Image (cartoon, rainbow, N blue to C red; front, side, top):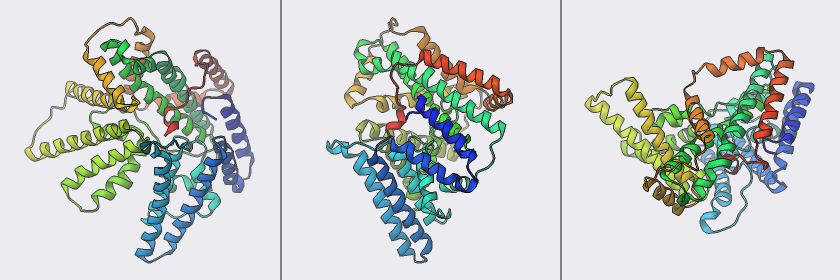
Amino acid sequence: MPFTTTPYFIFLIAVFFAFWLTKPKWRIGLILLASTFFYAQAGSKALILLAAIALSDFYLARLIHRSDQPRTRKLFLLTSLFLDVGTLFFFKYAGFFNLNVIVPLGLSFFLFQSIAYVVDVYRKATEPAQSLLEYFAFLSFFPSIVAGPINRAKQLLPQLRNSVPLTAEQGGAALFLIAIGLIKKIAIADYLRTNFVDRVFDFPERFSSLEMLAAIYGYAMQIYADFSGYSDIAIGSALLLGIMLPMNFNAPYRAQDLPEFWRRWHITLSTWLRDYVFFSITSLRKRSVVLMYVGLIVTMLIGGIWHGAAWTFVMWGLLHGVGLAVVRGFEMLRKRFGWQIPNSFWSSIGAVFVTFHFVCLTWIFFRADSFSQAFAIFRSLGTFTTNTENLPLPILLIIALTFAAQWLPDNWWSRMQRLFAWLPAPVQAVLLAGLAMGLYLIASSDVVPFIYARF
């Protein structure tokens, strides 16, 4: 039930009215029922796996919480990690061993969410769920189960227990977010993919260097609009139920260095990797510079492998890990020797230029199906040809406008949300109907899946 289809919005409207007409004490049960129905569309086997993970981690977390013995607590933690990581490894990385295994929808997202929950209970950073029903609702929450954001128990569980009244401003903001998400997905991501990006990446030898470069920029905008659009719809859908999910994107292409990029891109994954991988590695020996660099590279390698069983993802993660280590090393040298970096407009532009192009370089491996395809893209770039007959003007405009939108003032979106919420309901309905009609006219005849839904 993709977020861009009519069945999803019929489902969302039905859940919305049922939720607010239900007594507060029964609402978490309604969420579980709706989420189970939503995820069941992925197949009974996927639902059984989700239930098995929820069952095992719920009871293991309770055993960890009840035990006062460090060894016993660690044994239960390792058991949970073995089951979760083992499940992830079997389904997602069978491809490394030429095994054809169907990956359940959203597996990486709900497993990372469940791992974080058990680790947080072990670290005594959060209280365990009060019931299996509550934990299953947390893990299966339908707006975020397919592709995030990755929720933390201490943020989502209290909201599931105690729903708050929905204000007109929140309702307007929710509809605004959903509308923006649909624009990003259909008018930007799908349009770029269908009309330009896919054909260039699939047959790089047929296009000039300039067209290839435009396709790389186009893919950077496509994956941003696709994934941030999904996150907007997910956050908006949850907000209609009075539940606030964490922000997942914050203008990532305006970043001036790689660490800043990861503070702006897929925020819930990057903070997950920081809290549960990087800090775990560096805590083995505090103040170890070597271990810090190893931690950066290993963390990003895991981030790459998390996306799937492909060596191109490994290369993508390795490049980002090495890039983060280089930036960190340069910062340490700068502080040690007192190097001054000019704080000017042009130095900021240069930093954004370098960071953006490094990210685009890594997107080549992320998008390519194999190393041979990635190298074919580099060969196309290396011909230095400038033919543009296959580069439509609308594609260039969409790429440029999407990139330029990264620099809109931080409070612009909130002002637009408040303005939309201020409008009378009939006006909101007319605007949304007009948007729906416009998107229907430009949408592809086939439903284009979200990129991160396959992870």
